[in-house]
Length: 173
Image 1 (spheres, rainbow, N blue to C red):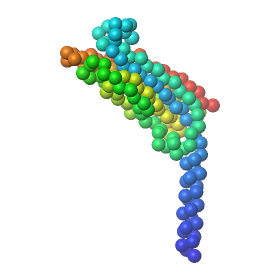
Image 2: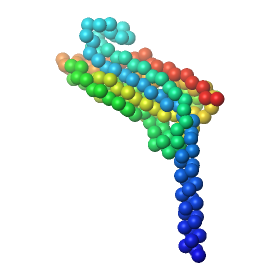
Image 3: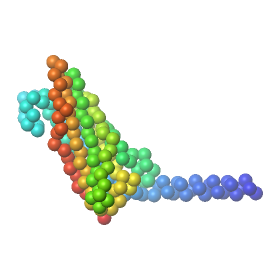
Image 4: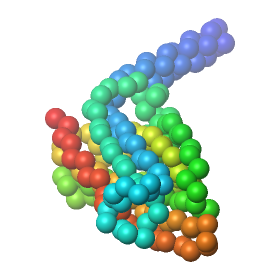
């Protein structure tokens, strides 16, 4: 009889955990793209004349609901979702992307681990924010900062140069 009771309790606990993990949770999904390409005699972005690369960047956000299990795996850690490396003729290209979430209602700022890219080309990244990061309801601001360091074939180091950040503001009802 005791074995049946234990088995029933284990099955019940397992069912509760499964139901909890498939419940939807509201999140903000940040998707971004950054391209580091050689300057080919074109316009150099950010008016840095000695910078031998052209950096283009963008980011968007989407408010959506995903299963709690998916959120638990992806939350609060920026990650590269797709990468198309390209040799740009430099010895070393290091791009560091930092994410800073400002939660005005809680008078709180959350900084996430930086994302580091060590090659030229086009790279897509994402960051999932939800309840564990303080994103439940209210107005939020995410600042995405970029630092670029380039070592030329001649051995000269340029940077780190702080590029113009991207700021995203969103509201969750």
